[in-house]
Length: 457
Image (cartoon, rainbow, N blue to C red; front, side):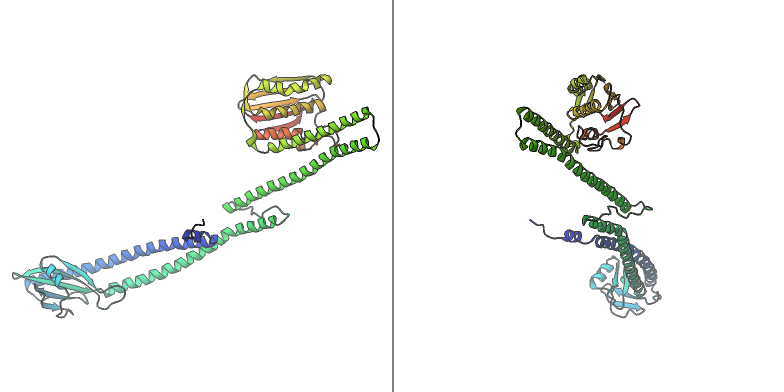
C-alpha cells in the first residue's frame, strides 16, 4: 500500500539545491523574525516607559492640584485631563478633554473604589485617530471623592513603532532574499563537482574508456575526498576488469590445450583399428588430460571460493599435525626422486583454517619437489600473534623476472604452457594467505627458492 503524500514526501522529491535553499530561507526567516521581534520589543518598551513616566508625572501634578483645590496644571504637549465625581459627571477638564467622560461607567466605579485604571484608546494597526493612553486614580478633596483622569496622546510613539515595523520588514525581506541567493549560489557551487562526477559516471556507464574523474589536487574538502574515493573505486574496477579479461583469456587457453589433446587422442584412436595395448595407452593419455581438466577446475573453484573471507573458519590447530598432514602425501614422491623432505614445527596451536592451509602447503611442497633441487624443508613457527610458514629448497631459485608476478593466476616461470601444472598453485597459496588476513612472499635465498606465509593467528 502506497503511503499518502505529505509535506515530508513532497519535500523529499525536490532537487537538492531547492531543498537547501528552502532550508536556508526557513531558517533565516525564523532568525530574522526573532531578531526583529526582539528589536521591536526593546524599542516599544523604551517608548512605553517614556510615555509612562510622562503620564505618571502629569497624574501626580493633577492629584496634588485637586487635593489643594488649585487650578489644574498644564501637561505635556497634546495631553488633557478630567476631574469626575463619583457618579461620573465631569467637574473640571483641561486641554482638549471636553465634557464627555473618557471612562466607562465600570471604569469610573472601579476608580472610585480605589482601583487605578490605565488603558489605551485606539490601536497601532490599523491606524486610528486620537490614540491615547489614559490613567485614572481616586483623590479625596474636601471630604469628597474625585476621580482624576490624565491622558497623553500616543501619536509620536505609534508613528515611531509603525516606522520601525516598516524598516524591520524591509530589512528582513532584503536580508532573506540575499541569504536565499547566497544559499542558492553556494549550493550550486558545492554540488557542481557532484554533477560533474555524475556526468562522468554516466559516460562510463555508457561505455566510456577514461575510467577517471577530474578531481582537483589542490583541495581537501568532502566533495574532493568523494572524488578521490570514486577514483580509487574506479581503479579497482578497472584492475578487476583487466584481471577478468586476462583470466578468461588464460583459462580459455588452459582449457583449450587439454581439450585439443583429448580430441587428437580420440581422433587417432578412431582413425584405424588399434591393438589392446595401444587403446590402453590412449585411455591413459585421455585419463591424464581429464585429470588435468579436473585439477584446473578444482583450482579455479577453490580460488573463487576464497574470494570471500566468509569461507574461512578458524579453529585451534596443532602445528605439528598441520605440517605432518601437509607433508605426508609427498613423502613417496620425494623418496622416488631421491630427495629429502623435512619439516620442523613449533609444538603449539594456532587459530587457523586447516582445510585451506593444508592444500596450500601441499602446493608449495609439490612446487619445490617439481622445480627445485636438494632438500625441501617446511617450517612452522609462531611469534606473538603471527604464524609463519616457510617452504625452502636448494634449487636454482625463481627467475628474477618471474618474482613480481609469481602469485598471479596462470603465471609460470617456463614460457611453454604445455609443461606440468596449471600455473594456479602459487595463486591459490596467495588467496589462502589473503583470506586469513596475511601475506605471501616469494624470494630467492641464494641457496634456492623460498615461499613464506605470514598469517595472524
